[in-house]
Length: 398
Image (cartoon, rainbow, N blue to C red):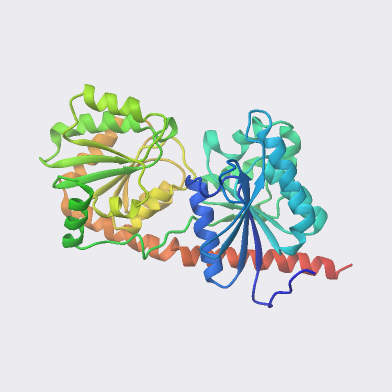
């Protein structure tokens, strides 16, 4: 028998093929949202792929029930087997949930939309990135791309994290009434400004010897353009006051190449590759400036976290950056790939401590007003209720 829920309590199913212990940007955003919805009193279940037999089949993290479904994680078998187990779950247990929220567009999303129509469950889809990783481009490379695109255009609601992803969604063919801009959420109690004394203690604890710190947080991969960041740093370095240091936090396929480049260029005294770190909040807390050199993004969690910490930002003009930085004055934007201008923006901020403080205060205010995880969870909850009410009213018409 299906458990009956109190009228104010929602039963939410999150479909996240990739989820903890995988910790990329969309996985992190999905986890934060799920935990925040549980904190608001709702019941949240996440279904994900069990790519490794050592991962538990069932787990509870932060009040969120995680169910990892079997798949054969092998080339040419992974997607097909995962789709099968997701389909079985939705057909046999999908009615237990009032709403389904898919966090990755593609075949799983198309499956959810199709079965959602069959089982009369509203489906929400999140558009996770833009340009080369946006919804239209990603669908083009899939099997049965035309069928998949047709299904996704029928989704009950598409959540976009920026004006750019919204424009792409409309061009893709999702009706305007179904497209909603809701950003990623940040825990503003974890990511927050620190006093000078706290920052000094954290720097000692992290082994950072520098007067001022520029921090990059992200995967060391082509789309994040860390090579471009090193090039900009080399151009900026002769013009920076003494004592500035660049710290790259993260790991990825370019790590060895970047380490070799730092060594070859003789900049080891001013550049650190910190590798993957789980305590990102500590590394942003010790920084003076945050940098983002990506070629494309959805809405970078790392930039939101840095802004919540009270850091000014220098970023390329990727999705979400315009409304976060240029429209608000919380940072500086440069065109994608223009590392010469990026270097100049770094030098300008380094030379102007009052500008850094002003931008940092604005950045914190923007996050508190628009991107705190509580506010983002409330907006999702409101959307869910509207969609559930729409389904209920349609049923009542028959």
